[in-house]
Image 1 (spheres, rainbow, N blue to C red):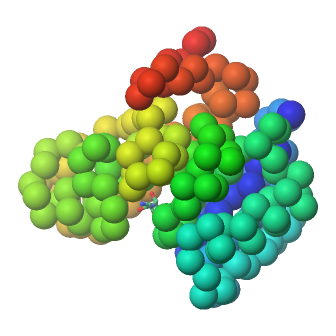
Image 2 (cartoon, rainbow, N blue to C red; image 1 turned 120 degrees about the vertical axis):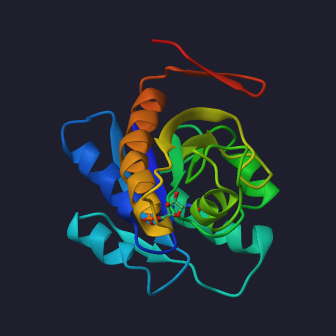
Amino acid sequence: MINLGILISGRGSNMESILNFLKSGVTNVCPKVVISSKPEAEGLKKASALGIPTKIVSMELKGWDYDKELVSILQKYDVNPENGLVCLAGYMRLLSPEFVVKYKMRIMNIHPSLLPSFPGLNSQKKAYDYGVKVTGCTVHFVDEGLDSGPIIAQKQVPVLDSDTYETLSERILQQEHILYPYCIKLFSEDKLVVKGRRVIVTL
Ligand code: GAR
């Protein structure tokens, strides 16, 4: 059994798609807690509506001082490095190296571009403005860098001539909602083997 903690900062649509996916009959992943870095995050209400405990860590601390609070909540809900998975779902803070080492290869992130292109913020807009013909989304393990950890899976989204930045973002988001649950399922079934930067899926 994998105990899941989800970190959010805003809307929480990826969180919601993960929780709905787990509700639809996935029995080996147990969602334990949703933690938001912002008290006003819309996702908090969605998590509560789905019956998942929520916490807010919005204090003005930095780095490991802040992340220690996260660890203490995660551990209280039994999301530990031995049995846990921490999913970042629109979580807009960089984790400290201490946190990353503690939950090594047990932290995943979803990012709205085909990494390593367009890391950081506003990635859909950066891809649209650059004029790429194909973009997409990436789920990766989190390392100490910014959107730089080993890639688990990616989904392509074509950029249409008729696209606005908003329509493109919406189609990427639809793919995010499919890709993230798929990666969590692979992790829970022990099908992900990390070899350096490469993540091999053993089916
Ligand atoms: C998603 O598009 C996610 O990929 C992105 O924030 C959005 C959150 O939406 N994450 C990043 O840009 C991380 N670098 P959501 O709160 O509705 O899931």
